[in-house]
Image 1 (spheres, rainbow, N blue to C red):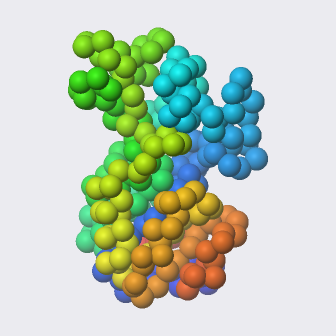
Image 2: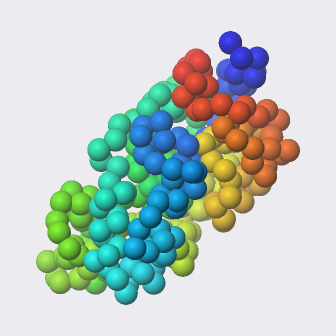
Image 3: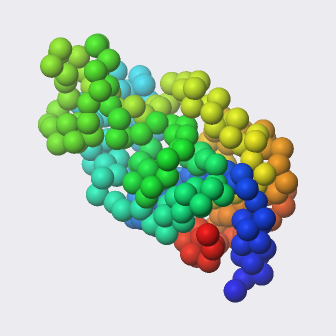
Length: 240
């Protein structure tokens, strides 16, 4: 076994308040494409750049075009949790992990069994009417054609943080509190380039910070242990 994975296993064994901070790399092993890699959504060809489509301005001005892309690319219901999702849920159930902080919007952590999940960028599984505030299911949004509308006539919007929109204050406060109270912070599957989410790891005051990613990040020098591997390879070795 890799020496660094052995070190991580010992850190997990010695810790009581682990927080996992994850990005798209957590779910790519479930088959969900990320955004910024060579084959990611941002490097695919559409009538409009994905960064523009996933903005509040575009959503409000070209809602039907937004939903064409959204239904085609962001329906996470067709994917299943992977070993990393399940292992994190097991660690939480065992009383070792206190929270998952995720940049993902796919809901796979909860499907794997995790209870305390701070979704910084929202979730495709939650939707609401922009007029009356009524909640709507993902099934309603993904199964209809055109722009989904509430019974009141209002447009239904996914509870996903688009470009030009602020993050939810309550979610941010919970995530920052969890990170600041952790004794072990494991950062995985993220390039740590998305602001402000990436900045929240600077609130960590615990014993050890571990970074697991396939490539280097700008925060590598802050970590006590850096493992350049896929998350599945690493988490499949973690013992609960």
